[in-house]
Length: 238
Image 1 (cartoon, one colour):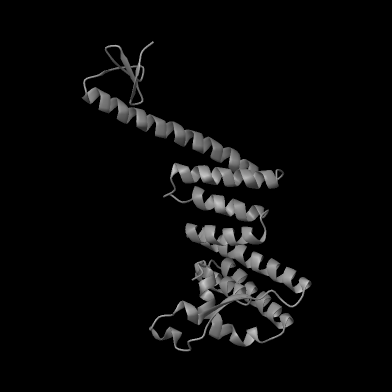
Image 2 (cartoon, helix red, strand yellow):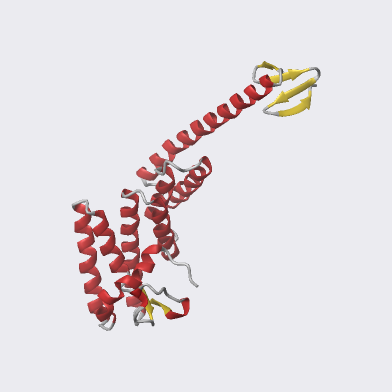
């Protein structure tokens, strides 16, 4: 089976809504895409994020969607992989293909924005990863992907370091982007503070451990006989 982000899987549920559009000309598909996307933008303005997400996903599903050969797939009996067909409409010529790529990229970025606002951080990363498959130099996708780690209260320091790397890539692509540059500078300070805090917690725990063994503590080092203990690792003193 093919692993797809959830917003692509929505194409199966949108199939009945859009099935007549799939039979139409490219011009009608493009017009429908623009109308549906515009609805999504309007929903964002009124902070109707669930409705906005639904419209942006529908706009993607005009060109990327899933068909099921079983007409009763939604009856609760489940769906078999061999009943699914993945459609990726690329148009009938190079110009249409290029336009479709731009449209899908635009809607994916809108999906990532809604996910970021609604704090679906995994969804943000899924959407941004799809954008970066289309455009490996899309600074906005790198920035939002980094923000998904930065804003997530459950992120570990390792994930913050990943966000730092992502921001560095974005900054390298667009060094004149003040927002990315400033965010990276502030985040570098935050990571340094996190590292210091993590080191302090480690040393405090080590201190309590060695003191429980009756070892003397001096300047953060643990002395016993001729052996020096530092950060929990013994070594011979010089």
